[in-house]
Length: 199
Image (tube, rainbow, N blue to C red; front, side, top):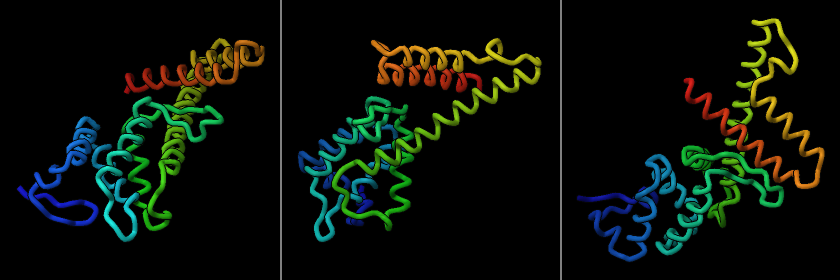
């Protein structure tokens, strides 16, 4: 069976791509990935290819290992100094890579690291987070308009939880901004799970 390299177009028997140890390591890294992420990662590797030479398999393995470490926590952070993280599934990472591949001509290639991808994925995750909050707010408003009741009695559990977290953060002490951000993330994750179970 013959295979074609999606980046350079080289054709060879499928086993030729896995003769080297690094080729086997690369296959072992890609194998367990979600299919959409694995396909996107193969294209993503092409963004690291030097202009006049091929991307070495050892370098490809290192890139995929680094990427795997970014995906595994299930969150994304655009800037580690701020500590703000957003939930990011493998599908979100795949979407971020696809977005980069679509704008390949506007990128400065070869890429040196994953910083731009992190920024793209953070943007996608932030939009999803905002959409979940909007859905909760719309649900609260529709409940208020249908019952004619307003104020804290009609607030959703998420709104009440976020208010409580904000109050605790204002108290300071052990209630640090990092603690508050973690609690907000947990609360939003719970409401996202609840919303997805209702669809």
